[in-house]
Amino acid sequence: MSDTDTRDPASLRTPIVAVLGHVDHGKTSLLDKIRGSAVIEGEAGAITQHIGATAVPLDVVSKIAGELVNPDDFDLPGLLFIDTPGHHSFTTLRSRGGALADIAILVVDVNDGFQPQTLEALDILKRSHTPFIVAANKVDTVPGWNPTEGEPIMETYESQSDRVRSDLDTRLYEIIGNLSDEGFSADLYWRVQNFQRNVGVVPVSAMTGEGVPDLLAVMMGLSQRYMKEAMEIDVAGPGVGTVLEVKDEKGFGTTIDTVLYDGTIRTDDEVVVGGTNDPIVTDVRALLQPRPLAEIRTESRFEKVDEVGAAAGIKIAAPDLDDAMAGAPVRVVRDRDLEEVVHEVEAELADIAVDTEEQGVVVKADTLGSLEAMADALEEAEVPIVRAEVGDVAPRDISVASTADDPKQRVILGFNVDVLPDAEQRAEIDDVRLFTDEVIYQLVEEYTGFVEELERAQQDTILENITRPARFRILPDHVFRQNDPAVVGVEVNSGTLQNNTFVVKWEGNEPERVGQVKGIQEQGEDVDEARAGERVSVAIDGPTVGRQINEDDELWTEIPEKHAKILEQELTTEIPGDELEALNMYLEKHRKRDPFWGK
Image 1: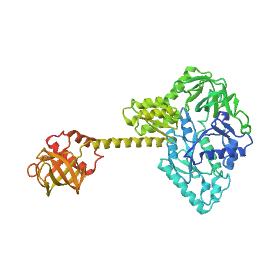
Image 2: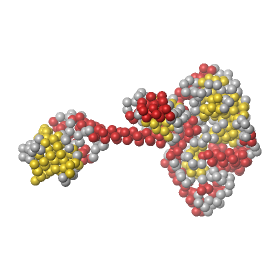
Image 3: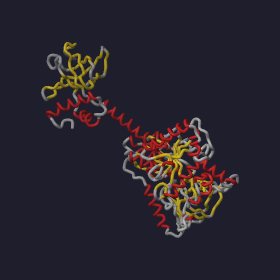
Image 4: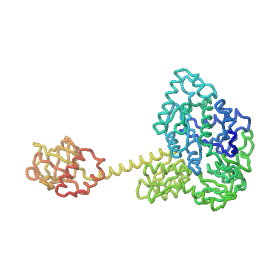
């Protein structure tokens, strides 16, 4: 810190780091490597295990990163890694400004590249405006890679053969290209001049620790350079945090795992917590944190502490927490007006509230943050929501969904939640469709696919019950019977000639019904219809050849006006081009005498 800077370094909190990425790309392994390196480098107790988070202090970061991090260059106390990696925890972790994480690591496997959850994570990072860097993991799996444990990536990269370097470069630039496709300018981190405009890609191995020093150095550098002001907190002020999880804990009842991002929380503090109905006002009975790694075998997994300051993960035991919600705010009252704090919590919950409509689908999600992300994705897909709540799918959700008139809305979309057994039974009885998934956009895709299928089936049903247009000609020398019924050979010029339809012949501007198709044969076999280009013999009940109809006459299927209207307004994309041509010619003939026919 400079001589002129008199700010108390204790007033700067630890930046909160979230780790995101596709399943199996190494999020947990990377966290474990950072934690493991910290334990190896530091003495016992150098690393602090929090609830849902791991604090790695600056001196330990410096030991792992070696020459890349000089502790004298930094004011920030270290990094706090959220332990439960993935976009689930990221969307849960909210603060007043949106995402609670100050910075994120997006883990991408160099072999697999971008996968569904990678895109999902990017979408969430984009929405929440969270700065991030990409950890291009598993460099040690490049064929021929020669590992050097825990080294900075530039040194280990230089020691590889030309072929291995070239192979890795190809994979890295594919990731950089994928980022570009998603609207992010990116490059290998040592080539990035401005991290606010460009995403840095850090090649790493969670197995060998190669590149981990670089990753920590970039995280510290970004935090120090761009987030120092945001890290300034009132150390002694009333604590502000977010519920990570609501859990039953033996001996304590319902507890809330909380990430504190401002101020302090003390035993006996009065707190306000966001609940499913109203904010919960309660008193802290105990603050619990995991015992140090050395004492983990003791009977109790937690030890009580009197006070915790931001940033930290802490378990809060207090009465009346049954209705607390994951993702909801936690605020300490202390010397402030209780009503004012309750109002702040209500306002924060209202910010997350999902806009609902009179008709729509029911949405359930595991946390407030993911509920909000679901609502955003559905709004983009223009899917209305009738009810949106946190929690598992229960029978009352089925009751709400079953009242929808439209089968497209007799639906429940559940993100990362369970379906209670009695709800599943009710859904079958009430004909409510359940969709559940752990990837938001896949859930939305499943639903929109279902809607398209439903609409196609509806269109098919309409088409089955509608008279299709057809224009056909009686072939010369193909009169097989003159009447009762007349049997003639015809060629279908356009459209679909169906059995049992009425037949008209145009005399000037007037259509004259001449009879009804009572049978179609193709090469002696009975068929229900004949398509454009086909020649068939047709039995027409009503006319006599030589009087009402003649060889070479052009005949048309008679289309009821209501059917013509549906065909023109709703089904033009569902019928073949030649059928549309026949319809348009038929409409044109009618509209010469009545411009509004079929409109």
